[in-house]
Length: 231
Image 1 (cartoon, rainbow, N blue to C red):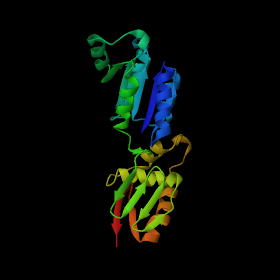
Image 2 (image 1 turned 45 degrees about the horizontal axis):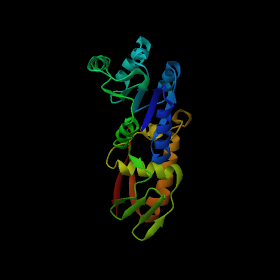
Image 3 (image 1 turned 60 degrees about the horizontal axis):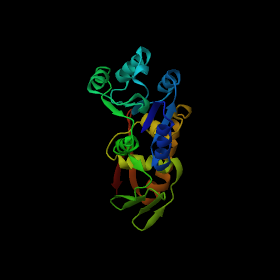
Image 4 (image 1 turned 180 degrees about the horizontal axis):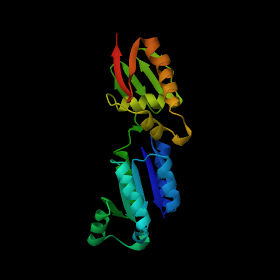
């Protein structure tokens, strides 16, 4: 999951930084002005846009950007948090936001961080604090980057481990290279898609080949999915 936040409050950026430190597969960018906001939208794909600005700042330029974004990114979610210094949202303001295509709107208050954290936690696929994942004889300890299959230990670390766990958590779903890049790399625009092929090759060398099993299936022109197969 990748978040782009256009904010006035450093508190929001600090919260996102803390989440990133705890979660595999969570990336964020925090910006202060519309030009920088638009720049990041051009080079990266996002699951959430978080706006912590004055309502008056929702001007035509920003609304045009958000309108174009909704057309190109059908499933992106936009959350508007009214700055604490601007008071609280009333029903008329909420209605105006809905008309602008912003379906989630809250006030910045003592519960804002908790709300955001719960929202993201419900969507983040991989957590460092999650203990283990089991799939047949396969056991994956996410926090310690530790894998066993039956009574055998497997050495896999770094990005190949993260790719493996990401696919495992989304087993039977076809995941594109683009989604893997934007979910697991801090600067995906600086990484070539071939890095995913390298990670998959390492997974097959470290897990599939020595254990005589198959874990990652390649779907031509679509991506990869986790399907555990044994002979």
